[in-house]
Image 1 (cartoon, helix red, strand yellow):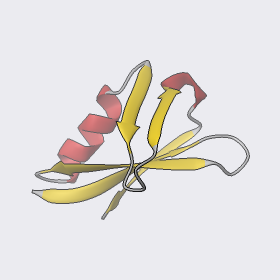
Image 2: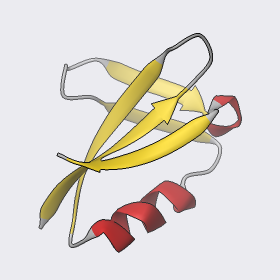
Image 3: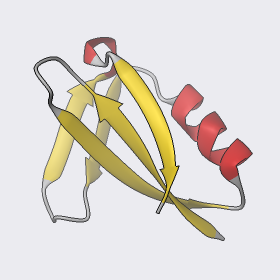
Image 4: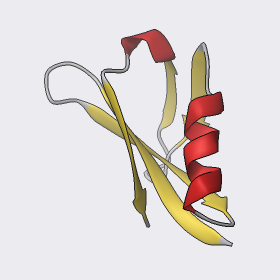
Length: 64
């Protein structure tokens, strides 16, 4: 398994990163594409995040 971060960018220079473990970058991309509606997770900083995908301006994926 490889570790990746899905980075969600919103307005006004605000961003949130969601850590995931998948086999490869293709699975990470598919995970990002499969997200619809509300996204909820606890980040590496132990902060709970919940937001609507309609508020996202940009998504990037980086290897962690």
